[in-house]
Length: 277
Image (cartoon, rainbow, N blue to C red):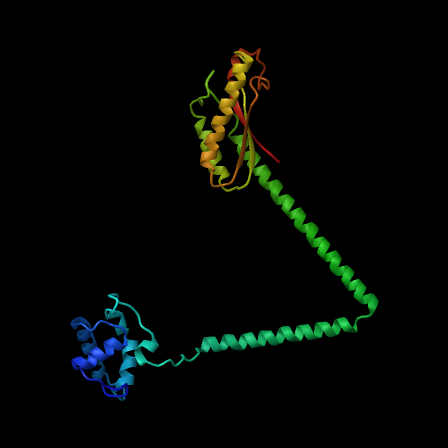
């Protein structure tokens, strides 16, 4: 069998040796690719010696291994170890060396800061040390308060934005004596879902109401059905937003307009949505 430093020939046993060495199938297709590559290598005058080591380098540069079928039936890449048969580590790139130098410089700077900081603290008088601790505690408390105020402000802005969205799309009105939406009211539900999708973990109360024409027990049942219907529609549209919905019926207890005004009874057949703070 040929040694790694010999001149490579196009003989079949030589090609099979290389293919087995690199984990490739010893078939006619692979031998043809390898033989053609070897011929081109021998015609390439950029290599001073057309020996085995230089062919390995040529093989790698031209990505010939990607064209060869592996012994497991796949075509793929190869490593430097696959080609040369050794385990020499690759030389570090200039970029890697630069990063190492920068890391060393940064480490030295940090150490110097620590040394000078300790020296400064040791040179402080006892009362100066106490004052420094007090100032540090005061700054920490101030930062904590600022963070709390910023969080409260953000929560208030979110609540106001949600309330405005609900205000623009509520109440939602229903057909008389039924839990069926009036024509066009479904658009309000779709608007609510689309606009509320940017929020998460919000609690909303859905309140159902009636016009108070029938028996109180029937009106209460109908108001609950209306509230549950809107709750179900919102839950389906916002199921990925972790909203908490609570539905409740009030019957005709909380009128939007007086029941004496029969021309406006339709305004009492409604569902209202409220934000829970």
